[in-house]
Image 1 (cartoon, helix red, strand yellow):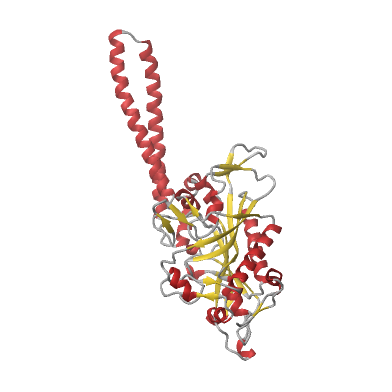
Image 2 (cartoon, helix red, strand yellow; image 1 turned 90 degrees about the vertical axis):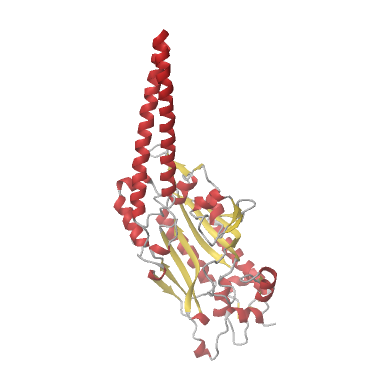
Length: 426
């Protein structure tokens, strides 16, 4: 959540952030009003409590009828103190509930607007000209079936729509991608983690997901647990209620996990193939760092994502995501989108988000301040970024396909496939 002290000092900054998101800016004023009520109720309670303490000393010194009269007043005062304490707790809970509805403060420079208002930062590589090569490109599912890599029909038979089997070279290709991503992350100083895919509600909420209204989340009601859509959730919760030592630099984790999304609002979209599915695998970077280092770490994460895209030899573009498409936790997000030939468009393969202190405040993750003139603790910054997912297979199969339906393996991936240079047609 946001820092209510910052909100109190700079309310217009938060109203502007809400406007940029195309969100309700009156929520800022509601939080401010709740904050005023909370502080007034705390003051009223503390005043009555002090009066109660002072009264207790008078009672201890009194005798006879005077003491009996004072005891009656003490009883009445105790009831007032109890009521004031209850009002204070109610005011605190109301403010907390409103604060949890307010998304992170958008950083300066983020484009305003919704999903289609992104800004293209750069384009890298050139999409293949299949017409010049003399053949019509097949889509990834047709290729996947030709080389025995993807089985959607049996996936649907076993689990329903938007499920699939990766088999043969398809399974090997995904494992190769994820292992290459993990190796790169380790070289960059990330600690590899295989994370839980079921988490408690407080972990899901702490990361910034609205478990009451988010239609994308799978919930196991009998156990009150939630299936994660990214290992970011588990990695964010890993250090909840802890104080970190960031003196030696950022603490970095690379999470390997299966991920689950209901895709509730995507009926009729990307129904063919494995672009938009309910279950997939991913290697996710996650960093805890200082507030001062967060922007630089965000740039490093983007560079690591681009390094992976270069290894699989895909043309792509980087976009600066608009404020209204950031989600609850991100203050800024860059997406890398690869060219998908049969769709004639760029599709997201990776994203990296700077969540500043938003998640850390919700999860109570702090660092100790030991610098000159500093003392106590403060919230850390958290960032996340994708290094590889199942969806990458879509762009790899389509971009590297050959006229006969076989697929040329990018050079960097070949060592992870025992030197295999081509995924052959069966």
